[in-house]
Length: 413
Image (cartoon, rainbow, N blue to C red; front, side, top):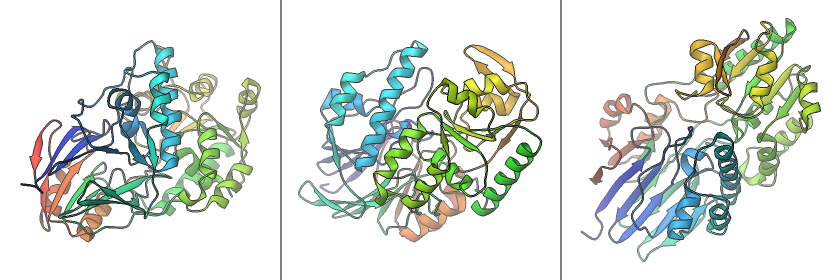
């Protein structure tokens, strides 16, 4: 059939990370994302077949991590926002540096990264682009991080691929809106799990900081460099704390300001950054240790400046570590949550600091996923990017046919 629709997840089907999917539509083949699963070393999706086009939803390693390898192998053109392209390149270079320091190999190098920089073709939300002879690709904001997109493919069928998405406004970006379609490919990261109301979460977060600062401690907030650390600075903006900012997030924040159209309000981020002290040196880190709040990378505590701060504060019962996102099993931050220990370069040491968790997720929660899917009015829903898609199947089956393909499995829709 000329309009037969097939899909195969090369990764990211029944897992969070390794995002990669090949969509077949007649003679057209489109690769949606090509990421990796961060680790030491990382794991990778299956190799892709020849495709006509690659599209990238956003600049997080689990979605963009293997783009340099892809470009070096196949000379692919990558459609994404210009901001996503810039973020991806920063993350790719950092991945190479980390691999060298940790002593494991990556399947790409700096030469491949340089090549990939010339392969990005920038697009913007609300734009349209013809694909092949019969289809049009439209781009919509995904509400996940600045520059993130959902893709709508329109022709004899109407298809939507969400990538990572959030339907609620955050301080950094506006939430995604549903798009009517025949087939919906939708992430299910938080299947079966709800998020707290953001205003309640922020109130509890600031109250915890008040408690720690009030007893003379330092608050360390490990945060993802892309979007999470900037969101935290916006939450802290009017709280009156002495805040220091360290790690790659500083560079990403400055990059965000060059793309004000990708932000909910660039002016608010400017104000937040102006109220923050930037760490530029070892001396700056020593000054930050005497501050009230330190926002720093990495979010999973597997590297970056956070380990330097924790080495100095690990025995201080007055201080606290506030985790602000999901901690992947096997990461240093998960070790901290589960066993109150941190791995300092191969040696696990007990941590006396207070540890707390706050769900500042940039993904839609369980109820939001169902509501979004229903509003799209699809005949078919394909769930991916989830360790447990089961909780979504029954409620979504009430209004659509639901598919949960395994990695490597080809399904026909």
